[in-house]
Length: 493
Picture 1 (tube, rainbow, N blue to C red):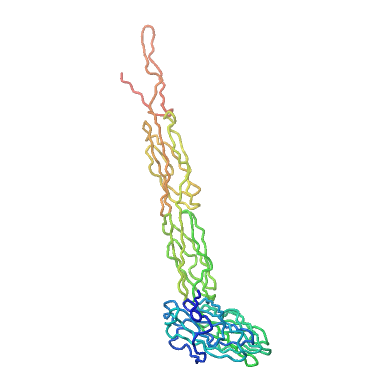
Picture 2 (cartoon, rainbow, N blue to C red):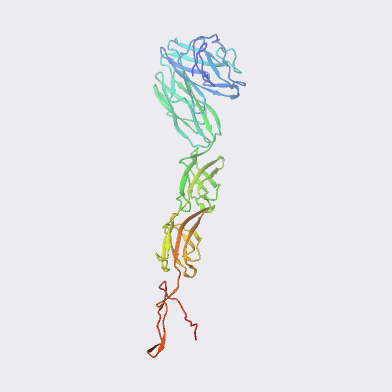
C-alpha cells in the first residue's frame, strides 16, 4: 500500500518510488553500494536515450543484500532535486521477491545530456527522522535527450529464474529496439547470456536466452549493451536466479480404498527433477504392506507404481498411512504419503433360524444346506465353525471361503439326540488379515421320545374243552418309522 510522505514513499519491506522535490544535491558524486550497503540497484547508473518531447521508461531492480537490516516497516523516499522523473511509478515484484520500479522521465526535459544522482532514503518512520544503516543510497542517472533517441525495452522486467543443472533456455525475453536511423548492435560480457538477432537497422528487436549450465545456486546480475552508429548506448539489465534442484511431482500421489482381503488395483504417480535433466533415482517404502513395483530408475521423467497388499502386514480394517521416499544424488529427498482405507469384510448367506424334527418331533432325517460367502473377490480366507452341539453334524467344519462361497450342510446326529426342544447358535468365523469376520445362525430341534410300539396292548392265550389258542402275532415297529434293533424276552417259563 502506498503512503505519501515528504516526496513520496511505500510501506513495504523494500520498494522504490520517485517524486519531485526534496532537499538533496543532484550534483553529488555516485558512490557504489559497496561494503555495508543493504540494497543494490541495477542498472547503476540509470541510462536512457529519449527523443525530445517524449518520455523514456526505465526499469530499476532493487535487490536486498542484507535482510537483517529490515526487521520493521521501511518507507522509501527518492530525492530527485533536478526534476528529471515523473511522479508516476509502477511497482512490481519478481518471483525471487526482488522489487522492480518502473521510472519515467519527464517529457519536458530539454535537449542534451542530463546527469546526476538520485538519493534513495530508507526511512524507519513517516517523518524520515531515522534511517536504515547505509541510507541514503546513491542512484546515478545519465539521460540523453535528442532527436531519434536510442531505446531498448525488454518484454518483461528482465528478472528470470532457472534451476541448477537445467539445460539452455532460449528466447526467455525479447528486447524491442528503436532509435535513430542507422545500425545498432547488442552485446554482452556475461557468458550465461545468449543473444539472437543481435543487430539491426532503426527499429527492431532481439531475443535473450540463458545458458546456466555450470552455474551453481545463487543470484547473478548481467547486462546487455545496445550501441547505435551515432554513439548512443543503453544498458538492459538482466537478473538471473539459479534455484536449487528439487523433485517435482507431475501427478497426484494415489490413495486406496478397498474391502480388507479383496484384491487392490495398483496405481502410479510420476515425477521429475525440476531442472528437466536426466537423473537416476531410487525409492523406498516405509510400510511392509506397500511394496514398490520398481525401486530404481533413470530418465527425465519417472513413474512409480504402488501395489498395496494388506496381507503382508496382517492389517485390520481402518485407515493406514505409508511414506514413499524419493532419492537422487544432489537432490533433497522428497517424502510423499499415501493412505489405504480398508473396510471390514462380511459373511453373507441364509442366516435365518432353522428347526429340525418336524411338527411332531419325529423327522430325524432332515438336512439343511446353506451357502455362505465372503465378499473378498477371488481371495479365499480360512474359516472354522464353533458352537456346534452334540446332536448336530455340520460339514465341512473348517476350510476356506471366498466370493463363490462354501456349502455348509447341517443334519441331525441321531446318536446325540435326546427327547425335548433345544436351541444352539452356530458361529462361522473367518480370519481376514487382521480382522475376524463372523456370522451366526440359530438352530432348533424338537425331538419326541423314540420308542418301540406294539400292535397289541395285551393278548390272551387259552387251552380248554372248547378249543385251544396258544399263539398270537404282535407287530413291533419304531415310533419314528425307522429301523431299530429289538429283542423280546419272557418273564414266565
